[in-house]
Image 1: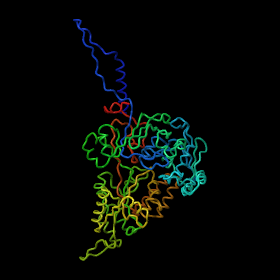
Image 2 (image 1 turned 135 degrees about the vertical axis):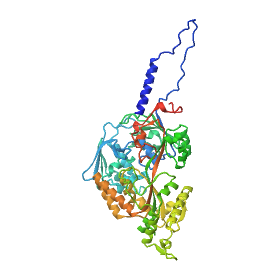
Image 3 (image 1 turned 90 degrees about the horizontal axis):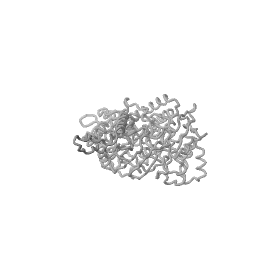
Image 4 (image 1 turned 120 degrees about the vertical axis):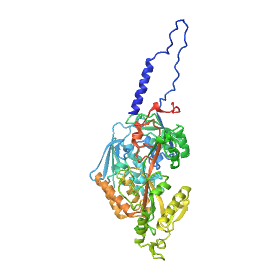
Length: 592
C-alpha cells in the first residue's frame, strides 16, 4: 500500500508539472522596466530504472542445475529456471511449470500436468520432454559429482543406474539404463514419474533444481562449460542472465516470456565482496540495497549505527548445530554416556560465547519454520549438570573417593577427545567445549586439531572417525524427510560419520516416506524425530539465524522472509512482484 501511495504521489506531481507551460515571467513594471525571467531550479532527476543490488560474500561456482550443490549456485539458478513445482516462503508446495499433479492411489507414480503455453526465454515452446531430459541428465553418472542425485533414487531404475561406474561401463549400456528410468513424457503437457516403491513425498523433489529444464542445445555445443556463459542458459524462470563475471558480478534481466508476465524489477545484480567487512561498507555507502552474509562479528557495529540497525532483519534459519557422538566407539556406544553428555552441554553458553549470540538453544533437530517442526516440544536431554553426573554414575561410571564420596569414574569412562579442523575460530569453539564438559563431569577432555586433508581421511575410516565433533546441517528443501531419512537412516552420510544405526528408526521412516496421506505421514515423521532424539546420537545444540540488511525502499520481499533463506532475504517469495520505491532511493542509486 505504501508503494502505491508513493506511486500515486509521483503521478500527481507529473500531472501538475504538465499543466504548467513555459517558465513564467513577471509582468512589466509600471515604469516599463522589464524584470528578469524566473527559471526554476533544475530538480535532481528521479531514477527510472528499478534495480535490486544484492551484496554477497559467497559466489557460485558451477551453474549447472544437475550439478549445483551450494546455496549460492542454487539461489542463482532459481532466478533463471523454474521446476515442475516450487516452494513458497512458508515451505508449502505451489504450482509452477506444472499447474497440477496427482499421486497414484498405490503411491507408485506421480503425474504432472504442465500449464498451457510454457516457453523458454527465447520464446520457443517448453514441453514435458524438456523436464524428462532434465531428470535423466541429473541421473547420468557421466556428469561426475552430482550432489543431489541421491534425491532421485526412488525413481524406478535409478539405483541400478547409480551403481554404474562410467569409467568401466560403455556408453551404450549407460544409455540403455537411462532409457529405463521411470520418467516419461506421455505428451507435450504430461510427465509421469514412476517409483520403485510407494512414495508419498516426491512433489517436494519436483520443486528442486533437479527439475530445472536446461536447454539441451547449448549443452550439446559446449558440454564442459555451457553453464558459464549467459547465452548457455535459455531458461524458463522470471529472469535471464545478462552477464556473468565470476567472483565479481552477475546481472539478471527480466524474462519477457515468463508465464506470469514480466517482473517489476528491471534488473537484479549479485555483487561479490572479499569479506563481510567490505560488503558492509558497500551497503553503508548505498552501493547495495540488500546485504547477505552478515558476519556475527559485525553485529556490534550495526547495532551502534541507528540507520543500519533499522535495516537489520533477523529471524530463525533452517540450520541446526549439534555435538555429534561416535556411537561405534567407546564410551559413546553406551546410550547412558550420550545422554549424560547431552545433559552436560550448556547450549545457552555455547550460543553466547561461541556463536556470538546468533541463534537460539534448541534440543530438537527439525528447526522452527520448517514444515513438521515441533519447536515447542522438549527434545534431547537438556542442560542439567547435576543430572549429567548422576546419569554417568547410575550407568556404571561411578567411583568412591578417599573420603567416601561418589564421583564419576574418569578411568572407566576412558579418554575423551574433541577432534576438529584446525583454525583459530574452531580452536576457540572447541576449547570452550572442552573446558565446559570437563568442569561439569570432572574428567579431562582433550583437544585434537587436525588439518583438513587429515580430517577427511579420518572421517572415511571407521577405525579413525572422530569421537566427538560439531555437526551442522542446512536444509535443501522444506520437508521432514530431508531432515530425517536422508541423514539418519543406517548407511546415510551423517549416520555413517556418527557410527549410528537404529533399525527401528529406519522402519518408522520407511513408513513415513511411503505414506500417501499427508496427515499420516506428518505423524510418522514426528514419531521418528522423537525416536531419534530419545536415542541421543548427538547433543542437539541450537538453530541458527538469518541476518540480512534491507533498504526501506525495497518492496515486497520483506513480507516473504523464510527460515530457508540462505543466500538472500526473501529468495523463496514471489520474485516477479518485488519492487523498488523510486521516490525513496538515495542520490547514488543507479540512473540507468
